[in-house]
Amino acid sequence: MQSTTASHSTVTSVASLASIGSFWQSSFASIVQNTHFLVPHFLVLVTSFIFFKAVNSNMRLFSCFCKDDKKGLPRRLSFTSASMAMGPWPVETSMCEPIINATLFFDTVPSPEALRGLVEFALTFERMSGVPVGTEGKNDWTMRKIHNIEEEKLVRVVKTSCDDDELIRVIANHMQESLREGRGELPWWEFLIIDNSGSGKSAVVLRIEHVLGDGLSLVKLFEGFLTKEDGSPVDNLVPTSMKAKFEKQKKSKWGMYAKVIPSLGKVLGLPVSKYDDDTAFSKSANKDMVYNGNRKIVVFNTVPLTFIKDIKKASGVTVNDVLFCALSMAIHEYNKLQKCPVQLKKGKKLQCRALMPVAFPRPAKETGDRSQAMRNKWCFISANMGVGIEDGPEKLTHINKVMKNVKESPVAHCQLKVQETIPPKLPLKLARQTAYDIFSRHSLVFSNVPGPDYPVLFGGQPILGCQMFFNNLIPQVGILSYNNNIHMNIIVDPKAIPQSEVLPRFYSQALVSLATSFDVSVPAEVHSCANE
Image (cartoon, rainbow, N blue to C red; front, top):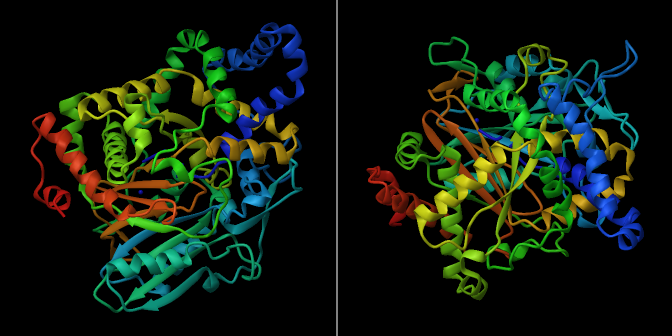
């Protein structure tokens, strides 16, 4: 249950940060026309001063976040969280509430009584026991505690009799039921038990508004929900490699200085960057897109994590690189199936980008404090998927280079710092519009969240598998690792992306192709999925 979605996948981090670019563009347009390059360079240098100070202090960018200056007052939400409470999109998009649907599958589903202790545990966290309150457009949002919560109403049961395919459709039908309206005085989350008496599995869905926390917050929450098979507590589920990556950046702070201004240029240019090429897959993302409520969940075949790691080791890249590359190869084959002339014409120059949430590790002092453990401490980065590249190993090399450049730059740190300090001073309408401008220029969101690499129990029952479902304005890919397996899905508009059910087969074929290129043996189940 890896990003970084954060899980995830809402838009406020990019939205907030992008609003600066739009603000500069509108406010200083006439000056720039008269003074050419002097003013924009001066503005970048002034803004960069913030980051030089941050980098010079070991990149401790977050010490002032979410604190109130006056003792005794409720802890203030970050602007990222507050934006999701207010709504991160322009009103005219008719976008749904940003709800994460963390889904666990079972042979025997836990009973409501078995979840009572988990509800009580969840309510010990500040954000899980209250509702966000504040002024729209203002940075004054806090959590208002709810007293005398009717705990039984936080567990809901739906009975069905169906196979596994129909179970996914049942989950989809409940994904966007409001957690804000028509529920009385309750926090913005619930356990939805889907008790299936048919041939398919049953499920428990933790439906939770993204304002309450990001992917890493949910990982910490699930550490309290899950137990090992012998009933003992699970280990720390946040990979040590994730923390090590940021520690490495701190140690190389002097090398970061020269990269701040180029990173700011990339960040601030996103809302006015070139739209992704209008391929068969990417055409659903455009300047006129709205949320029509029509979404389809496409579940990919489960893949052994050891297999992905074998490809990773043989090719010298990361697990995330391999998964990202296989998806890019699947999209390439989808465009070919749709006889896409744009891909044929553009070739390697084709632009198809993903927004990838990057979650920042939290200190033990923070994760151990239940008034701070649930939060949104993440941002989006933009990554070119290399969809137009035909050769698999060449594509993998391209993706590894793209991701390595991101990891070795301060772009994510800059984004997080900017989105929490400057956008609160700007009009909410501008932040929402620039979020829309950025998303409409990208083809999908790609989120990858870690989970335990061994079997665990939830509510006393063994978990068979898991998925993270999240409706977004553009296609959303959700990946969870659990028990040495990769669980993956993509949510699309079926009218904009017809025949999306072929993507899992193309994805499996891509993995087989990569494995063959690097002399890695392919598990029988992956071969079988590739030949469906």
